Image 1 (cartoon, each protein chain N blue to C red):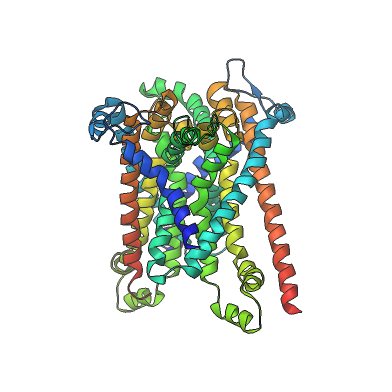
Image 2 (image 1 turned 90 degrees about the vertical axis):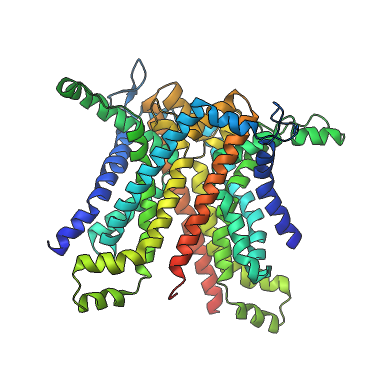
Length: 267
Length: 283
């Protein structure tokens, strides 16, 4: 049993480990380890295409994570304790947003936005000299749809586990709804919101399939990696891949720690 | 400000997002699936079922998806179950959380890079080269259905382990003691107590993996090299290369419909098993 578990762990980590190991190769060959160097990291970080893609990915991930956390938390607060048709409608929408395959979301967003842009652009261009196109905006819009749903699910679970007595006590002691929210509700929800934010950031940063359809002329880091792999495997991709995985791991650890710290007292 | 109004303000942005970026786009796909391909690519308005009638021309993609998604789900389940069992029942409780986190972590790192790692391992100079050294020359692994299956299991194993672990961990250990006190050998306790009680976890895990696999693009693209074609690969081709939006939309609608039907059938099948088990319990 123990040996079986060990071999599954090897199966899970060996491929990642090999990528990381080969990224430190000194040679040009991606499949043979020749000496040790960090030159490929230097090469990757001085490649303007990589830096551009990294900037796009980081901007999109940051903005979508912020929007998703704010809008998601707002919706979770409104939906808690709510009953009736609106609640059922929102539950259905959240469920659909999470369940529909990313590729279908990507396609649907692409053709809907292109259709809307084609209809609006002639008029808009005449009025302002400015036209809408796919790019940062469509990437953020499509990512927020999924990540906002994720935040609603996480924050709502936290609200349901929350001690209502504290909120009642606060209003009994004369605090207004806004003061209660700022001093009682928000601090209690903070770990869940933070975890939602970090998961949203990771999702957006790593997403390939939705971005593939809606990025327009922009290149995100996963799109860059995908097209470089098509051109052939190089140690530079190993280095970029290792850095991306390292960054995701760091965010995950922070998300776990905040979520756990929030759960520790009282539960 | 009234409470009802505050509620509407809070729901506003989310509602707007769902309306503009979920309901509207899905409606557009539905409408476009009834249209035609414009001569220069894209969409030309029409009201016809011609695109659906033509789905047969992409039958291979559906066939591959409908074979490899269940097979991949089953393979992931068979590998995940013993691991989940080990984590929930046999592992040292002190290390349990850490071991579980170690299983889940890879899932939250880029699937693109994890699939890329297997191009590396299964490619000509990876495992086949090692096998050639052992005298098993000329075995091709990359760009085969096997490579796609390896990628699937590798990519989705964490998602399968977690729900099974949760259902096994919740299992009341006293039931197993009772079973062994009543003279059941361990394998019988496992088959009649542990396994049935962990079915909800098995069901959740399989469903999650299956749903994600139905829409998979990256793994067959990278490890199947265009030879093992899923519906997702056909969709990318139709929207980004041949720009046949009407046919692509019909295919996307069919994919979602097939997914919904399979999941509903599966749920019904599971609840029937559950109902049967309750009957046994009552006897």
